[in-house]
Every structure is written in C-alpha cells, then in structure tokens.
Amino acid sequence: MNKNTQAISNDVSALAEDARALLTATADVAGEKVTEARQHLTAALERGREMYGRVREKAVEGVRATDEAVHEHPYQAIAIGVGVGAMLGYLVARRCCGSRDQ
Image 1: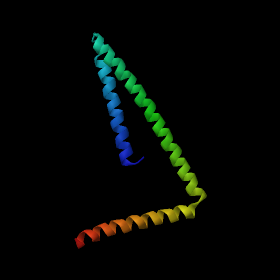
Image 2: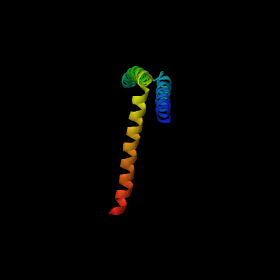
Image 3: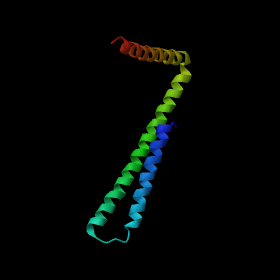
Image 4: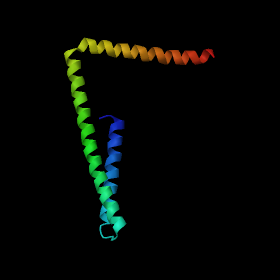
C-alpha cells in the first residue's frame, strides 16, 4: 500500500473509532433526537464499512489483472512504460523551457 492510501485508511479508521466512541458516550443520553442521530450514525458507519470493502475489493482485482497482463506481455508493458515516461519527460521539459522564453 502506498503512503497516500495508508494515510486515507488511517484517517477513515480514526473517524470510525471516533464515531463509535461518540455512540458509546451517548448511550445513556435519552431523547428522541439523540436516538435518531445515533441511528443515523450507526447506519452511516455500516454504509462506510461496506463501501470501503467494495473499493478495496475492486482495487485488489485491478492489481491482480494488471499483474497478470504484465506477466503475459512483459515487452509490451516495458514499451508502454518507456513511452509514457518519455511523453511525461517531454511535456515537463517543454513546460520548463517554454516558461523561460516568455
């Protein structure tokens, strides 16, 4: 997992823990609005957990498909990587040099 993905995962986990702590802290608070808010928060946590699972599953499927494609066609993968790198290098160099001319 890269740094950004890990940071997002940590943030989501911290948010879920804070929400659970809020639910626990308000367990003894009576009132219709508090009960309704607790139900909404519980439902939102469940939807978030399900969405996280689906996104993670799709990401894993994508990684597996990419890995399989690279193993089946290694030379084409290398050529694509070199081509994309050359294109990005050209665009960055053009932008750097182009700003000096003006």
